[in-house]
Length: 578
Ligand code: 1PR
Image (cartoon, rainbow, N blue to C red; front, side):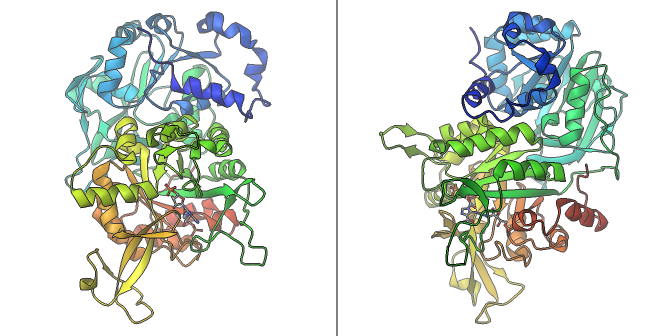
């Protein structure tokens, strides 16, 4: 039986029908090729790489990275395509068990074992590394390809370790391989909850390890067989240079400037683009004050701070560790009807080689003709269009309220469905709380904090009330309760905004961020209120936030991303420098 058509391939087709982002700018290598000849015998072409995409998730980023480096892609459609490949990239996605299931059913598992036995050039990525091992604990035990001895295990969060391991971490290189030349001292991007432990039995395979809670295998290398636990396609210039060395073994890869040596998981600096249509119908990056994005002048126009793809590309070049797009009016209309937004995502993902998150409007929807779309379909379209993570706002609040009310997970909420299919590391919950001062914690049933600055009537406490629809409606649930509930429902990360601080430039709400980041074991992104470099060091010194996000200061070019990173480095906070 043939595997399902690769989703990335379908997405590429869709993108080709829309306005092409880079069709007018072919690379030198592409210019030399006659596209009609690609389908004939692509594997004999030095500029073609074979991609094993078994249709379980988004590999668009890998496709974009390969194309960006000037290579063509031939998709595996049958086990024979694996055996005839000159160079095979295997970006494993989804869960271990379902991946092995598809590979075994389609005969790909045997073809992969044979390809590896013949020592043909192979690059596995993330799950593509884990599947090489004997078995995994993920939904298991489940048997793997059995190429490397060992059992893949889950990171243990019982002692407070934040799981998933998301972010830029450092490698300890212990084998001299061409692939990792120049990577020593640089951070690379990881996102996973399971890891392969090093042991005496697999020691000969290991080319690097990484520390997160304990040491785990971050890459293997034996002959022509290579695999990495991190994502080179999302690791900026360092990652692209790794890809380049695999794709053109004679190249030394682009030189990545050296800098202070990376030693551990870095705190992330994220640029956020709130996107919506302005009154002329153009999709623009806007920015609010406490969520009000209209000008205070008589025109009351939606503020326009730039074009989404241009700004995202610039922030990538400037060193942002991630870029987030929030479709801030997505709650009003059907997001899949918002083709410009999907096109923005497709174009941005061709230029931005760090993780891209997109949010806005992810929920079940019935359109005007009565056709029902599940939130999973909406999320899938975002993933196919280039998102690495999706972010859910309003719908997560309703799901958490229902969960807390009945105390049972129904498995039906958007959050549960999307995290089950794409993994919880791909699902962010965006919280939009507003501060409510109280005189005493007894006044409310929600978790309060003793605030650092008293309220207008001298109140010493506050709770943080969640809202939906971009802050328009308040809900009977606090940020603390919501964060814990969505972690249980499958969220992999929390984007913690604060309506009171948004756009004010007075610093992050440390009370709120400390309360929430102490309440969960998933990463928390601090958001809203950044006005200076010192605000970033403050939030990392005083809270457990894993990342800090800003919008206005970057859009208005008041504080460059590099200045934030240099300041953090001087303050002793590890950051990724490129
Ligand atoms: O509810 O699932 O449709 O998702 C809607 C998404 O859009 C949510 O993530 C929500 O936070 C976001 N959103 C809705 N309305 C607004 C608005 O501003 N009117 N923006 C909005 C949220 C907050 C941050 C902002 C930071 C940093 N924006 O993303 O970028 O506060 O800003 P700053 O550094 O300038 O202070 P759904």
